[in-house]
Amino acid sequence: MYNPYEPHNKSEDSQNSARGSFNRETGEYHYVRPESGNRYYSDANYAPADSSPVRRYYYTPPEKREKSKPKKEGRLTAKIVALCLVCALLGGLGGAFAGYYLPERGADMKVTEPPQATATPGATPSPSIQTPSLVTPVVTGDVMSPTEIYTLACSQTVGITTEITRTNAFGITSSASVTGSGFIYTADGYIITNYHVIEDADLGGYDVYVRLYTGDTYPATIVGSEPDNDIAVLKIDAEGLNPVAVGDSDKMQVGEWVYAVGNPLGELAYTMTFGMVSALDREISTEESTTINMFQIDAAVNSGNSGGPVYNSMGQVIGIVTAKYSSAGVEGLGFAIPINDAVSIAQELIEKGYVSGKAYMGITVTTVPSSVAQYYNMVEGAFVYAVDENSCAAEAGLKVGDIITAIDNREVKSSSDLIAAKKKYRAGDTATLTVYRSGEYLDLSITFDEEKPGIKSEARQESRFPSFP
Image (cartoon, rainbow, N blue to C red; front, side):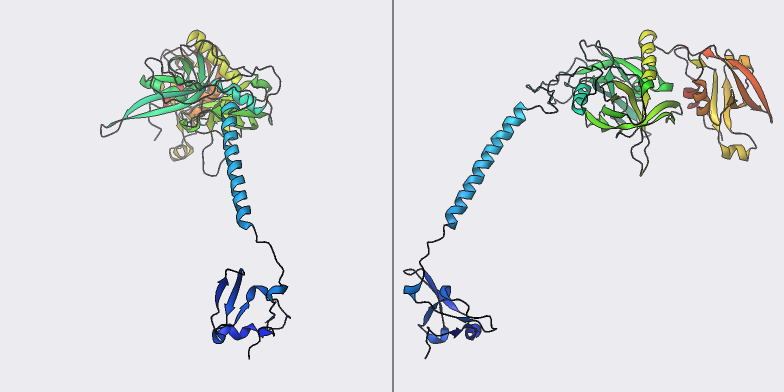
């Protein structure tokens, strides 16, 4: 006979699916042995008798059971959920308070109701942006924090846009935007940028617009440009602007921290990147075949950054972002024009509309590459396509077909080499040209003319002629 008080091998039930029932009066759960009918025993009060493979259980009579208080897990869970809801509510209120009252971009910013973009009559409408008013730091010559430099740059950096129209080979006309950056040079609205930022507007007669950090957009006038050095000056009708503090790029050193601010890709307005001066006095050839003296930085720059300022750690502008080396697998190779060079050019453009004293030869040249030189038994150099009969070149004895191979013993292997060498001279200076003509070398003395407004330099004229076959 089955005795529930004796040890029972529960493995006997392994072949039977145990069923159970709950006793509402005692609060106990009982398993039912299928073969024993009404014989119940409480599984909740079994305890292992030993560690043998066959597990044994013992039955504890109801009168000997310990009375335990029911667990309050449900209440505890409810309390935890309620606490989480309260924390979330408080956190949301705190975040809203901080987002409204705390500065968005630094401790020196004061957030007020964001101004709406103001469209100047005649300007292209621009989308409204939310921008806080700035409490601009004062440049004192002391080292500034990156946040202070960014706050300063926002009040001095501008976006530049030109809407151009192009017609393809099928006669279909399309519009496109050319975007870049610039910075405020004077409080009454003179803006410095790269020439290639506004080149399409200059050559095609398109309108140029300047956008400030506040969202205000102004039509701009091209005051003057210097393509050979990639500098241009614009003018907007505005007063009380915050001009940059111009530093001394001649005192710049490799390893010095720098900050570039601009509008990369024409969409990410007022982006700041930082790095250091990587090298000085790099002779960089641009797509226009001109060579410009620049310094190298490893701060990230992209399309749209062109014309933007490069700040030193004291908040002074020491350069203009102009170029980057774009190639797969290449990073951190940005280049900027030293501010001393840029300002001297900009000042002349403002005062005269052109850069005075530039050396001018009066010739049209193209490059004789090494492959052509070998095939035609020629020499590498700058091939003279045309000579202005009223120029210093004609007076010096240069002729069409001459190949200039050196200027004052500085080797010339291309037309860009010649232009770069010519930049070392001023109008009125004299130099010796080494020329290859009819199988022999000649030395010709030339005294440079001055390049006047409306006269394209040799570098600009060259693109009008086909390359040497």
